[in-house]
Length: 447
Image (cartoon, rainbow, N blue to C red; front, top):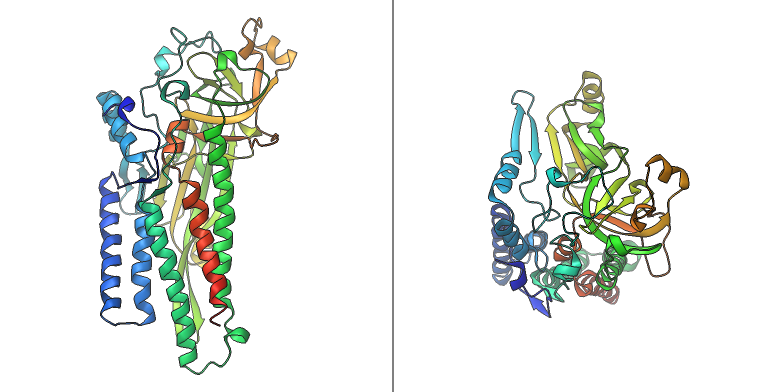
């Protein structure tokens, strides 16, 4: 499949289906749970717990539903990028067992929606002597928005369809719980069980607010024209390009100080160390065990890098950006035990059963999208780099610490195409949670 054969305008509705084996497997499980739950309800089995079956099924279906163009672009990536390069990535990805006895494993995601869709220049072709000059003939990279255009997500996908059903079942569950309380003799829901509709309202309100800000960022990405590095000027600019090294070099990230968990050639990183903790909770019906992942430690950092879009390179100050989105994690280490005896003793006291370290970030060669403010570089830094100033993009640098009216500075792994391909429309991000919010308000009328 070729990219130019795709219609990047999603339109009103788009059928979006999984495109990986595990995606289809999870999709089948979610669909099965949804169908079984519907059948049981139609059979007249109206126990409260039955409602959870289709609800969980719908949540799985929504989670596995890709963005408007994600599946098609995955196929474009497979047909466009050199098969040898794809094979090398496949060999480096997947699950590997580091220590069977200690149950230590490493996992590198087999698919990455934030990676290049079209081929990008390899390190062997980079000009380290002229970081800011054009690459080859100076034409933009194949995946630059001036070549491929800007995709517009469909108004509604299967994600939205599942979401409508989910909102309906959540409201039915809440009303069923309220009705059940009346059956056991509760006289007033207003005094003791007001939290049922209130919980629905809070969930709907928080989701609506989050959806609103995500929609603003999405609309900003769609509406803002992308600048070419060679012609950019001082001020706010949207840029898309490839991560290349700055004169300062790159980072070697040692996750949590453990040399067995290391990643080279990073320019920005964020890692977390989490423990899977369980505890016994006492309820009026007895006891139950609750388990969840708890973040114990985390760290992040970065260094300057060169964003090169084929027409030229510009210096980017990664650490100045307040909004960073690195997409899919790069690597994850799992273990049944902590990495040292002292940590294992303390974690066992806290009820930890499993441990995992997850690394996100930007590496050399990665695609990057940003919206930031270009400022003149200091004379000292220009002199130190021995630049003659003939290239305008060599004497400016991009900051992300100050928003402008209508412009929110951000940096993300992936191009504009890959980031918008997996995004949701404003309807799915705002209208669905708003519907849940209104439903929660209506529940007060039943109380």
